[in-house]
Length: 319
Image (cartoon, rainbow, N blue to C red; front, side, top):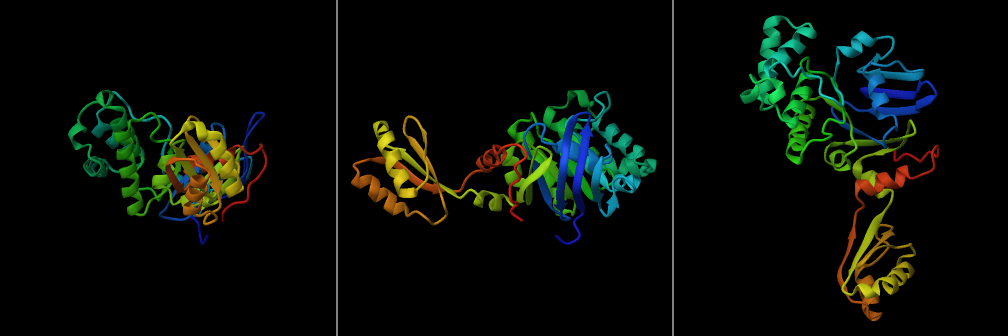
């Protein structure tokens, strides 16, 4: 990757006996969304804290927008925005006053802070609620205001640490729309999330982190391709589940997964199985089916396959 805007090389971070980062490597190109995925305790939030200059690494190197996060922390802070896991807005102030306050904290002149607050409220559809105290906001509105507050100085890189946790689907979509607008304007987003569909929808690049290391990376489609397709069969008669499973194992050479009472799923290499041939084989065996389909794996299935590996076993990255 040429001149990544975020570059992490062999990053380590300890908290007492806990080794949160164990040689993390990461490279993010400008103007993209990078989804950082991993189980609880994998090191995602620690990585964000180091990149946002809130924690210093014990070893390794990280740069943001060309500046070292340790030696040039002030320069990094001038180029980033951060929305953590919990909203940082003041519930006793109005939405407008919160944004004006953040503007002043970012050293904007008073008039510029007022103007920027009004601009952001209008752009992200919070004008009608702007003069209400934040305590009256819904969870989605409060989270949207928190994201907006991180944009006061139009950051080159925005760190979003699980920004939609606990939000309803409508509120999640509002945050997603905010992110898409930001990226369209040239902002780079590093998104940590436990929602696999969120990463699938938004991320140009996904990095899976486990035990403090990046164990796989690539586009959503590239990661899905690493575990092949799946053949899904729904039986007309649940009593045929066992014989159908044996037949499909023989046809595909893979061990099927059964979901009683009537469903079978088999991993297959792309293009290795003829759907028509599978249907004929089942028909010849007298096994009636309600549905047969070949589908791409979901990102959830990729994530579970990657993170179920033994701790410390490194997977070959997609790229």
